Image (cartoon, rainbow, N blue to C red; front, top):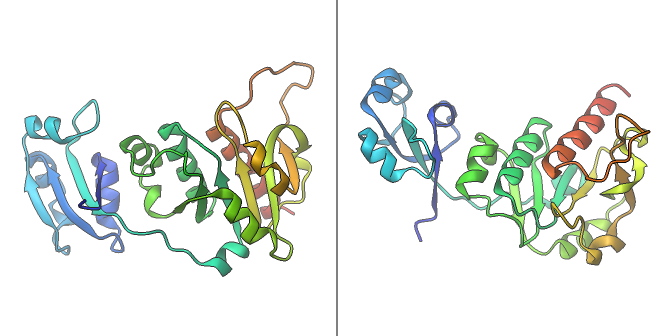
Length: 240
């Protein structure tokens, strides 16, 4: 195994090239793209390969071949137990759609959430659709894969550490005192949070609808739910 992954597309590749902290193994791009962005390579020791559009079509995982692809090494996530215990993180139970996972990663990065805990049934973080949906945020967020029960047991003993679960019924998230630390659990797209984890949930949250007179049969898409909860908590923390 080479332990490497691709980041594909004009903007994503430009962004990683502009970030001096990202170690890039190789860039493959068309001649027009290389000529336009030659300044991005002048101070970086990167292997640069020119490719035709036909070459890019063979290499890419996307439907439309991008003008540039970057090859990066897979690095293990940084695990700092004290940092996790003293901040807000997200736990994902069996999120199988890679587009959802990538969007959640992007949302977490936007709101400054640095650690996501994924059950073993979650989509692979290096799935090309996850990478594309995250728009590069995958490089800024630590995704830890493993048994969520072990994670909950470890952190539930921390002082003032609350484990929140998102459900169709619960306390409206906009009426909850926003936490500075803790963990928010989001469940599978169709089945929600697994029964085996319910005993770890300290408080059930729900996202109130805009029209209480309507009967909503379907729940929000999980990526939308993550965005809504994070936005509400962030706004309440910013405007206590």
